[in-house]
Image (spheres, rainbow, N blue to C red):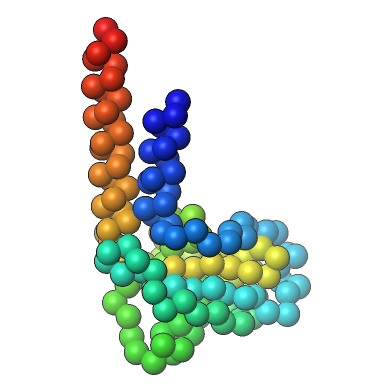
Length: 144
């Protein structure tokens, strides 16, 4: 239904923030053949706003942890955002930080965002989902 589709878009926009090109995930073996992975990185504030976009050229063998270190070094100061999100807003499990970038990239490109555990985007998603459930419960009650 239209309300559910609208709610999904609102939730997705809240998690991911402004729209940016998405690359998807390719085949690791093909990605290992890349000379470099173009890693596009942003830091997400607690308000959910993405700032300080940076692009690094990294080896396909380098890791998510290496990408974070490159980002911190490029900005010249540490950051408190302890989580890494993929281009769809999913928080990566810390066990994935040691995996090669080629496992996550596609066509030699990768998007990464650094965020807090429960930033505004997560709060907005939870609020939106709760509101959607409440709205549907109310609508259903009117048609009984």
